[in-house]
Length: 70
Image 1 (cartoon, rainbow, N blue to C red):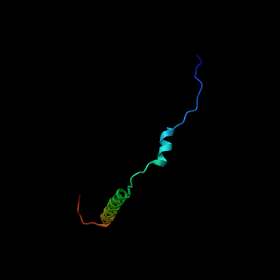
Image 2: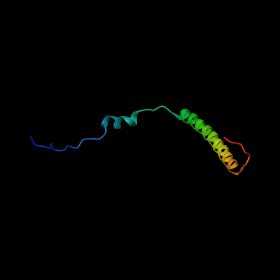
Image 3: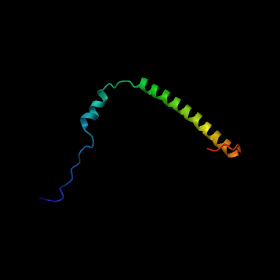
Image 4: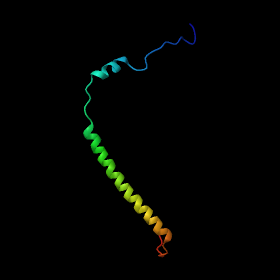
């Protein structure tokens, strides 16, 4: 018995899946992508509005001496 055993090259991926990929018909995901884009755009718009309101409140808080304490 020889230690360590000799190395043998082996494929890193199963060849069956690599060959079958060209023959598969995958379903279209366009409708799901559009829905996700719309949801992301809506969330981004709301986040920007909240961020702007937060910055405005912060700046007003720096320069106001209204006596309002939190």
